Length: 112
Length: 114
Image (cartoon, rainbow over the protein chains, first blue to last red):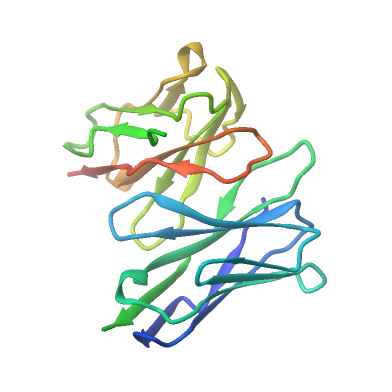
């Protein structure tokens, strides 16, 4: 299966600082997606980056994709306490087979 | 746009009992997924539907789990009989197309088996 693995497993920062988390995967992809999950809730889609894109922005979020290294990073700038959540990446390998899988996620705590 | 609706929100049952979860995806979303998320882990795909057909159920424990999506809209996931290790959050998600442009998840059903 096409599984993304996030690191670090946990990240603790102060409000206003930037948070960077990474995702690595094993085989070629069609696109990669980042999701946020607040405690006890479902996942919220944040951003999707396609294999032919290198960088994408959405508000305070910046996602990069390096297909040669099979890795992606999610940067949250000027973090807020409300950004406290778990962050997951999911990969779409494209083609006829598509089993979307998630890693264990990065647990981000932003201290006010 | 209404989100993905799931019910119940919480369920506590004894082992060996049966339980059913319901999901109503976003209108027009052809693809529907059921995920199991054990505490501290990422969501694990159980079954994927495209309209009312099963695309993948390779990770569904078919001896106790079953799912259906009648008429290609609502879906139910059933566990019978439940085991202690089935305690988890069961998430339903839908997307517009199989080659996803991003999923929309429901809030999930938290199942506790005692």
